[in-house]
Length: 213
Image (cartoon, rainbow, N blue to C red; front, side, top):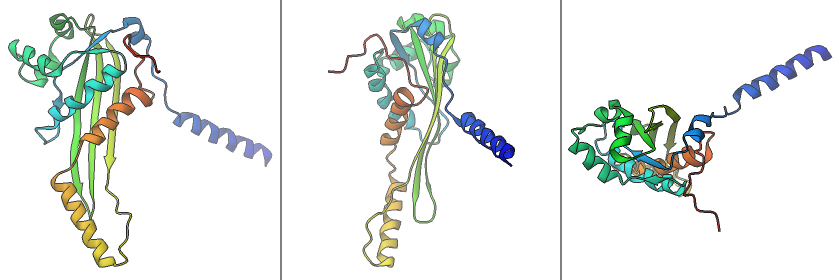
């Protein structure tokens, strides 16, 4: 009996170990030691045509605060269009070394929006964002870092009026408002922050990282 309990215990420990977050290999990233990151236009696989611009407005600050020089995204877009790269898919398929030389960038960040949606289900609306991130060397084209993040938010009604009918009405109105005008920005900012600062994917600190006072 004790033998079987020992076997079960070892199996459970092995299962827990298998579920532990996998450490990323940052050796290539650290060897490259990028000082600057070029954020290129975002591939949008969602149905919201405004999603790329919203995303780009959220990514530069956390990257810069991590200690990297980030090229202004609007200037980057203008320069790329001047080179005939009007579409994000064209940019992502272009030679990364060419892009790196064009701006003098050490590394390039490619992002794909996989999901940017608000789903209405039984008196509630769930807002979902999902992104794939890749950082590639602007000198060799080698992939240095990759991450994927999905975030969801469903507004909760915590205050009860004491009337079930009134509460249902409030829930329906809240869900309708969220569905009509979903706010993706907090979720997007949270996704970027977790990927860059918290998750096992978190980037090493850049050379311009300001020490905490």
